[in-house]
Image (cartoon, rainbow, N blue to C red; front, side):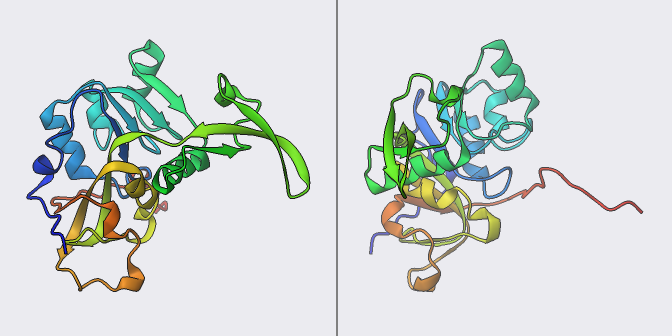
Length: 236
């Protein structure tokens, strides 16, 4: 059994270079690879294309990479909680591609399955479809237009899991099992940071969400903040 453990986030991301495309798991601030994002900030790589459901907040998550101008392009579904993102987008400093959330997930899955493209009705007739191929298909007795979307061609996928073993098998916890499983499938190289790292054989095979065959590097993260993006409390 191959041992895929690396020492820390710095070692895990050491060969990520300028102008690469990264898939980053997480939804809001839940299940994001905090350690790897911090390591990328410290490394100072620039010109990154980041594919993530959202862009974090101003002082946390992918917002840290936006603050240091390390991101050239964001491909996301929801970006409403980051003032710096908004500023860079409106000023033209940041290239932005907004896509439907299901399309984002399925383009990851397609990459993992080895499929070059998918066809989806989402986005047909909107700005999302500009410059893209549209084909007509009959499905369930109904003929309508479908938009062709390409699978992501990412250099690295960076994900965060609850538990993992030294062979790269991963288990996600609760809502942290969001975009992480499909992104783990889709990178040429997948890096996983985990809260708990155990020897092979300690994870129940029936509970594993991402098989180790998809993961090339794994390490035990530390100092997770696990912030709440929007806290709503009851009035006293």
